[in-house]
Image (cartoon, rainbow, N blue to C red; front, side, top):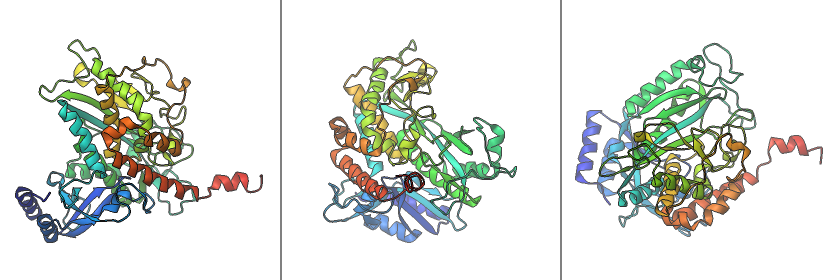
Length: 454
């Protein structure tokens, strides 16, 4: 599928208007890392005309530590090139470069014209297509947490909160602390400026319960557009933090004595024709479709955890009394369960999936969450009764390790119908390689407690 003449003309006009010298064209890989090319503007346009923006298909089987899952079910035994087609609607000027530069998110295609189905952005598109075929349109609103930490060049040394304007580090919990956010006011002013320049529709910034832990809320909207914005936001925050001589990290559990970071996903479903929220009736009651959506999350989410908690570190966050869920119960305005139904008007009726970590690929987290809800709706599942009180008193039913998560993921026939068997096979293969790499590392805990005691 080549770029259309209209897309090429639109891109050429955009580059001329902004006097662009270079173009960053990239795709998100399984880990959510931007992979692609930086090239002169004229060469970018030539590549659009001639399918010349090529990358190896194996980019999509690359692990977070740079290895490859060479026995995956799609690209093995040989690798081929695929080409990138720029999504012109995603073109944005990069605001932090001195030289005029544009970034553009791309989709990957085989030269036969078929999309690369193991690409995360295409995975989300396929899930959205299933909704579209039923006359449904999902609406999502991510909430993304992250930590600011001192620069740390030694991976064996624990992370520390950075020093703010006061000259001191945070040592106590500062949930919703306005002055605690203002400790890093110059950094966040620049984040807002950069986001505005890129059309990233962020809303509310709050201080979370961890030391120098923040949460940014996005305004609700189209699922693919919000995934794009979240992907670009993570890049923007990391870049801005470096400009202020600190790190921003989206690790799920970066510090031992601090809570983890999540990416909560609020989701609802509208009628495509009328725009009506299908989760609430005219009297404000929950509809059967809404309850089935929740039931789908309850049934299928434990099996899709490699997309919501994709790293070995992810499972350190999902512990009792840690501001993170441990099971798939749901409740009304209950923050201790996996699925919270906030108090809202009928038009805003939604469910908040609180399971995903901040370390997830936003395309895959949104695709996974919507896929579970979709299966619940088409199977007309019924949820359990809503939980009153603490969900921590109930059994821990989410996977406790990535090993367990991959085992459940690989055996879910329901998810394969929605996410695709090839995609799920690639994810399992990549995660197996990452686990093998992790198993070769001896941790400081093992040296401290086992070296002289066993």
